[in-house]
Length: 69
Image (cartoon, rainbow, N blue to C red):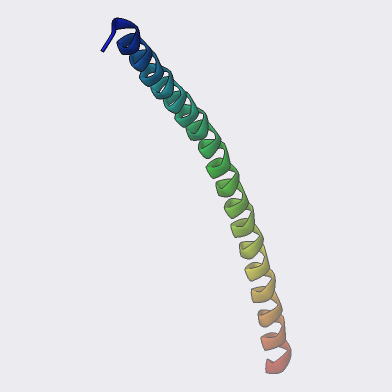
């Protein structure tokens, strides 16, 4: 093999490796943002469910009081 062929293969390998590493880092940053958005959605859903449970409990207590009398 000629030196130009060796250098060409080396350059191709380095450029491919660099591209893969950059894309992986970019994907990792996007993944963190998506996971944070999912956590926020879950937290807001959890708060909504807790509020609904409190409201339902209040309604049950009111019905129980009404039935006792």
